[in-house]
Image 1 (cartoon, rainbow, N blue to C red):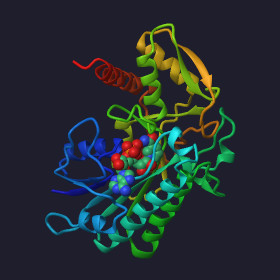
Image 2 (cartoon, protein in one colour):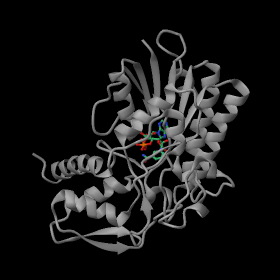
Image 3 (cartoon, rainbow, N blue to C red):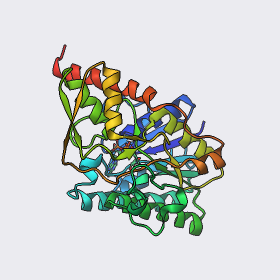
Image 4 (cartoon, rainbow, N blue to C red):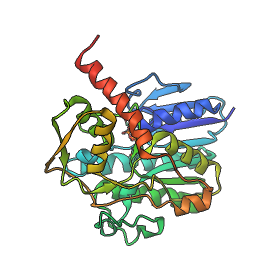
Length: 328
Ligand code: NAD
């Protein structure tokens, strides 16, 4: 039985990835500061631990049968939505915490001779100067340099991509790097300050009455694409099974404005909702996944329409919100 180690297994993507790996027959260990928020983990062994602490990483890499983990997935990061990473208030923590985690993990992965390591980078590492036109952002993998991310979160991701690639060059570590573009789905944070746009919008619409308005940060004309979690994990697993190290985009290329996303959610809810634009952190003006490289290397790219995933997310958030407001 193949063994996988999932770092950040208590988080949104990590928890879903543990479920996927279990369904594929892996023995799985998860490590995180916390258990998954919305369901019991399916990991065979789950360690509550801080990956900034080298001793936790050293202990975590020891596999149950003393042979190296075949696969390690590094998803742990100090992160959140725009309200967390674009205000500037969390910059030092974001950089220090995530860089420390990655420095510890890259080094121990070599010492433990693990088979392959997956690293989750982000589209936030792309240069801001290529994302000023909301209708025409440039996010091909080769456009990464000269580097100019618009957040410290993006700079740390770029640093850690380079860190893992340096370990590949100098120590033969097998790495696979994906740049995720706005992954969303059920079992994700939808309130509290770390939530991302799709879950936040679903919460706002779910708690609004028909005829009311919801608040939207900025003018809502900023564009993004959003990828449903199941397709993201399919891309991750295909990349892991391939010979291509990346970095490669894993994202949808169905670009929408934030206003259009709110209108989509309102339609799904069946409510009449108007938009109230307020000042807020918005990030770059436009961003979309460029999927030429992933298609070339993996003969696969995401294809599910946005509305299909958003419908599933809306129903889940709606259930959560109403359970919380009116406990049985
Ligand atoms: P998440 O915040 O839900 O998960 C990250 C997990 O890392 C959390 O459970 C957190 O507790 C854990 N963690 C943080 N610091 C830790 C520490 N010191 N020790 C142990 N665990 C620690 O985020 P997510 O959406 O699941 O994202 C997973 C990865 O994908 C992250 O690296 C993120 O930067 C990257 N990513 C996500 C998106 C997205 O849209 N969700 C987009 C781009 C990149």
